[in-house]
Structure formats: structure tokens, C-alpha cells
Image 1 (cartoon, one colour):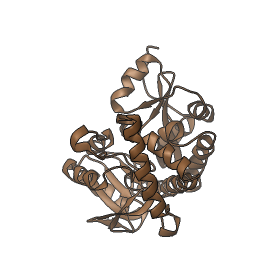
Image 2: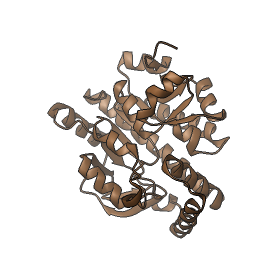
Image 3: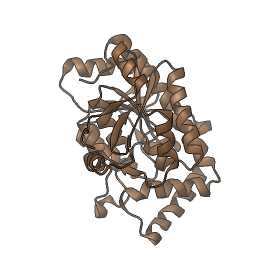
Length: 311
């Protein structure tokens, strides 16, 4: 393979040509975040949710070394069903392309590719962040640094509760990533509605988010990302006692099995799925579908303002 240009799915290319709203979606949730065969069903449901809210889904991934913005159903199926799909962060993209790999993009990689492709809104489940014991391991997701230098709006349910949420918020502040709560002043913890930390800012509608993006673009001062923290309703979160018990067990298993680095998150998520007998999986699906819907409505509002493309 000698042509490494980004490839665009037909639907995404047409939407961008016509100035219609587009929402970026990651593929790591398809290949590494959800168990088979639920992963493919949910991936299709996420895309359908974006369409139902008036936008075009652009799931990003790599097929045999080709970086694709807007995977078609056959490509999506491939990443959901074949073994050996590589988890790709930003640093891995060029190496994986040259190697002709199949790859699923993380939050960091999806954000960077989406911005390069002119897509200004991205929906995911939970952000990566500072891992527990990071003071000793220096284990921190590339999501944070990437968002510090990428002009994209990311709709998420906060950071995964398996991480050090307080340290992650401190790093986001230091890196200059703007964080707003959607109809809340409390930061969510993925499975949990409230992770226990206050937020300085909140927004109440997709139009308000679009106004923030418009101000950022017109100022041309801040080039970092905007994080929109969209919590689950309390009655839809994972039972907090079950969550805490499962997390404690999972952390002990991590240490026992010597799991480190980028293997930590999929390991713990798999533990949650099995130990909660599917309860955490149901919560995970609710999270991403709610975020996909909100991201699509933000993209629609941004197009109405003329601010759908990053600065």
C-alpha cells in the first residue's frame, strides 16, 4: 500500500459536501469495549441513533492499513468480528497504516482524525484519563493530551469510574481542556451519575453548546477540545454498591494478573460485564446511545450556526 490518504465513506463525503451535520464515532467500543455479538448490534444502533437525531454517523477505523472516516457496514462488521484488531491511539496510526493492520481507534485517535477530517463533534462513552497509582506508574491516557490540542467537542459520560477521576480533572484543567456539564454541575463517573466532583460550568441545550463552539472559533484563541459531560439519570446508573464492590475485585485481579498499560481498561470493563451479570453492559449501552443522540443534536445546532467545522 503506497497511498495513505484518509478515505471517506460515501455517506460522510456527501454530507460534508452538502454541509450537513456529521458526528464522529470511535471503533474501539466495537472491537474492544463490548463483547461479541453485542458489539456489532450496538455499533449499528449507535449509528441509527445519530441518524434519527438528524446527523450522519462517521465511525472511524482502519481496514488493512486504510484509515476510514465513515466505515460501511461490511467494514464495521469486520472490526466487530475478526480477531487481532489493534487498538490504535494517535501515535499508532502511521505505523499501523504502513503495516496494513486492521485497527480500532481510541478516543484520542478518533478525535484527532475527526478534526483533521473537518468533523467538529464526537460521541463516545467514557473518556480515558489518569489511572489509579499513576504517581508510581505514570499511566495516563493519551486522550487528555490529544484533547488539549484538538478543536473538537466530545460528548461523554465523564471518565470511566475505574480511573482516578479527581486526578483526571486536575490534568484536564492543567492541559486547558474545557469541561462543561450537560444540565448538571457535577462530573459524572461513567457507570455512575455523580463521580463526586463539582464543575464550574454547565449548559442546558445543544444550542448552548453550539454557541460555545462558535465563540471558541471566532475568538481563535483556544484550540483545545470541549468536553461535554452528559450523566445518566440516577435511575439508570449502575447500582453504586455493586459498582464499588466490582471495582475493588477488579483492581485486585489487575494486580494479581500483572495487567498494565492500555490493557487495563478492556480488562476491567470485561470484569464488570461478567461480574455484574450484564448489568454494566446495559448501562454502557445506555450511555453511548444517550451521548450519540446529544452529539447529533449538537452537530445539527452547530450547522445551523455555521460552526460545525473545527477552527
